[in-house]
Length: 157
Image (cartoon, rainbow, N blue to C red; front, side, top):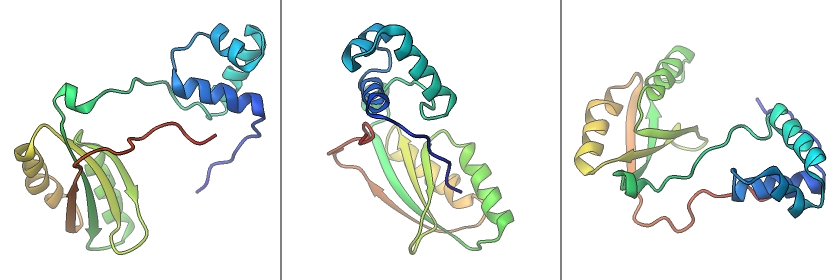
């Protein structure tokens, strides 16, 4: 189900672009960039947080520098689309730290997983001993990232 949107004016969008570039930027610096004083800028930021537009603040970490150089995108097909099968699969996915993102998809496969691993042996262990044993998993197809040409970035506001 789609979430409702809130009306964003040009100033809200400038604030969001600034925060996407640097989530630790001081309110005074953001205010200077968007042409507001600090108090109304902070009010806008709080409104965006309360409305859920700003979901959270997080650091962007280089996976290779923390020992996670292997990335795979894994397509998964389930044997059944029954609600209880999907729910059990979702629960099993949520328990796996290797899966950093998961999406229900249209097309031939049911899910796309973004998986991180320390090496190919660790990925194989996950795939063979965890993923293929998850409830309802019928088929998987793994593709490994060779180079991140354009890693996830800022939303086009």
